[in-house]
Image (tube, rainbow, N blue to C red; front, side):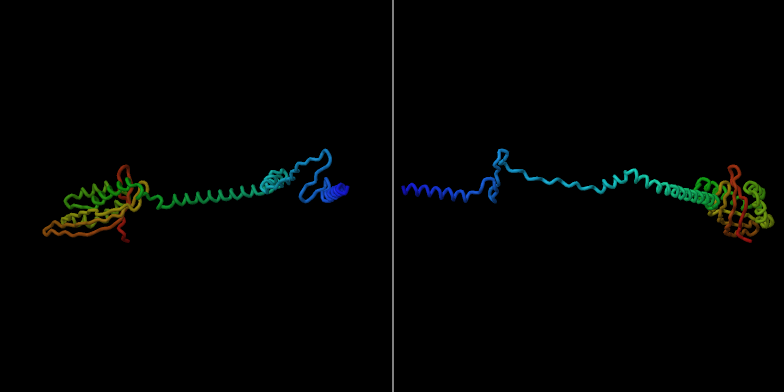
Length: 249
């Protein structure tokens, strides 16, 4: 009997200790989650709640949205209307000033003698006038006492305008002394250059050597160098001397 009573007491103590140490059903402990008692209780773990993403507003999109706003466009229209006439007026003034400058510059270029001089650009015409005037100078400034008519023909062929009288004055003494001293005057152009060429008019600088020979009893020859300028005009296909400048007053 004692054994049986001891066993019963022992079982009671063990049952009481188990009841005291076991956590109540349904209460959560640090190591064990709470378990529901009802039929709707689900023992599966509950998924954690994920926070929703925050939407960040794009400043560029906001600006474009503001620009597309009809109200904003209406506010900007008066400013554009004010600026446009001012820009057009400024452009008109600038174009007018440019047109005036271009017209004045063109007139200056047309009136400038250096712009009309084609001596360096018209090579063919420059060579033509240079060759013909070189020949004309040699012919009109040469004189042979035995053939004065040759000098007269050269003068009629190559001289026009003022040059006709100028040539007579320059050779007057030679003509007077030629029969007595039997003079032979020979002029050879050594160098010439076209100073100005403007259409059918030209001016040339001429360098020449002259020899004056007396063929009387004692033959004697003298030499001299000459430099002068001639104005030339074109008559048909021929260049003629229209004026002679010896650079003397």
